[in-house]
Image 1 (cartoon, rainbow over the protein chains, first blue to last red):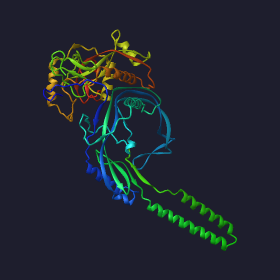
Image 2: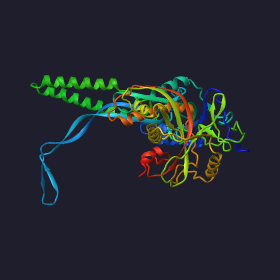
Image 3: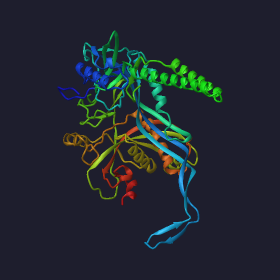
Image 4: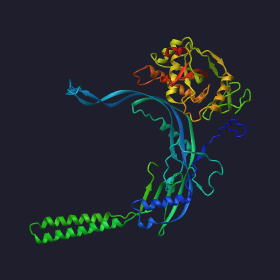
Length: 308
Length: 222
């Protein structure tokens, strides 16, 4: 709409895709604070990492493909479902309290076939990562389609922010979105579907993520913080092995005591010598297996649920 | 966007597919070549019963179609009833709500009303719409259709052809109780944008709260 004369303006489609971005609502300090909070609270992290020193924080906009379409059509077919039915020759009696009661009647579950006539006229959406988020150590943030988006114009984004390059073909995403939208949902057995897509749109959405780096000893780790809500998107931290070592030591000690006990019994009681010797061997083998399989946890990894 | 006929600024919401000139009533649709203008038609009120409430004009695409369907299909029955005149498919285009498109589309297609059409949209109606829109409830919280005298046109010509399939299947589904599959071929030969007079009345819950002011629907008035 022209701000001067109020005339509506339509822009001719020149091909390509429209680009939008989610405005960042979390600043550098808030992102670092969110990372520090996660390190303090998340279980299984090494004590040395709890108060780690944050060394850098970079805002990165990651691209996400959005495929939208309107879907119209119908699904016909048959569906099998269970239905509760009352069976038996129940005799109806008039009780003293004034109510009717049935005797000898019971409920049974039966499989019944029902016709399906399912209309559909709705919007369907598909979101796919447009770059390798794994290389960044992040997962695709959850997008509902109802968030505030702003058109991405030249110079619109923070100059210090990095933008991931698009590495996934949009046509591929559109084809996948179309296939996904056309999937029948009625649950009918071999349904006769007549579904049509229209008003298909493909857009690139840029999502802000803070990559917050911290140092533990000589090693660098990072926490990815959602730039819109401050939640932890993904994180890696050194694992805590103290309790694992204590548990291993206790088990080995217990095994040694048991083996010593069985050996003493084998020497002291001639009648149980063979049994005790076998028991001592079994415990020794079990302890050896446990020790050989023991591994220290190097890193604790976290990914935001319902993302990906 | 300016009217190709009189040069005035076109009216229409952000989600509109067709824009109406408030001066001459010509419709304009966006296409690859730019704005394409055409003249919509307005149907006259033919109801013989009393009308209570303000009359609105609902945008509906009337599709001329060639359908090959089973001999016992609902469409064949409709076609025989209106013969020798051609039967049309009606696609409501003022809403994309499934229930509205389905109910009014089925109602109009089954009734095949004899519309008394006049070319163009009366400029007084469109201007009334523009004035009404100024004072309209922006949140749509008040009970009502959410637009002025003339409805917006949210479905374009191409989309109407797609929705024609939806309405056709709705008609078949409406008549047959035990329908498990539909075998048909539908080809749209042409389409015409028609504004049909109606009254917003919440008592017409089965017609998405619209009472169509056409004599074919008089039997439905309680």
